Image 1 (cartoon, rainbow, N blue to C red):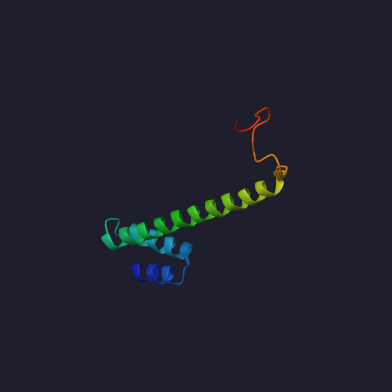
Image 2 (cartoon, rainbow, N blue to C red):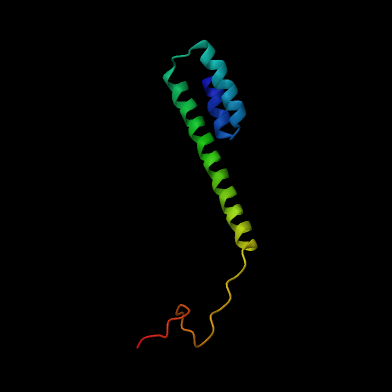
Length: 89
């Protein structure tokens, strides 16, 4: 069963790998190689979740950027001084 789980991981069949690991753990719950394989699956699931969240954040950032009004350019002679400031001396 361990080999079937490994084959499923190599095929990127994550659901199949989880199934075979579950079946093998019923036979031998303390198998070290199954624990390592299970950890690998958990790390993969965490990485997929992080990747999905990052993609959603980027998509949201692009959507927010499209809805913000663009700042108008400053007049040529203003030089970015605050109102009421006569300038340097």
